[in-house]
Length: 195
Image 1 (tube, rainbow, N blue to C red):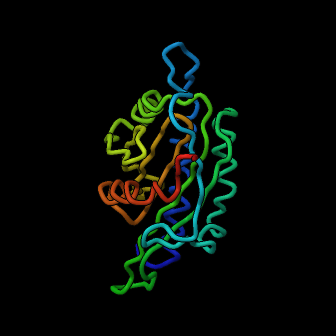
Image 2 (image 1 turned 135 degrees about the vertical axis):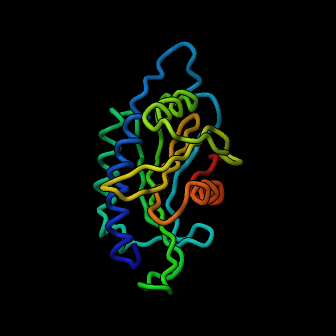
């Protein structure tokens, strides 16, 4: 698929996968003696205009109704997800044909009450058996990536969970390995340790 219109269609399909994966992981009950939910630093989540070489795309966000997706994630989290933010980022040229090299990813993430990163990743791996654990980067926590299909279109999806927050990146234009590298690169621009 090429061109901005095709990317918009595939990212819209990815939104369906994103809602399912995030809701299942957010629904994990961590109210046990073994929970390490509140230990660790507090984090803030933001969606800046630029992340590394990617630029936030309000036009794609509007076309994809990512605000509705944000609301669905909050509902699917059974009240545990709060301050959920969403954004779509793009890099490159959306011109159809050989000149089109646009890379796109959608982010949805926020705070997660009583979080246990290990249990959240285990839930994600149960939902997506082919998921691969990847580096969560300098901010720690747990992360995993997988490929999933929506209407016969493949999308890459990566998630991270830490002691009080979560994030999900979904891309119709990147491989799992590429999106895992993007996660490692852009996460410090999205999530920061509160001072």
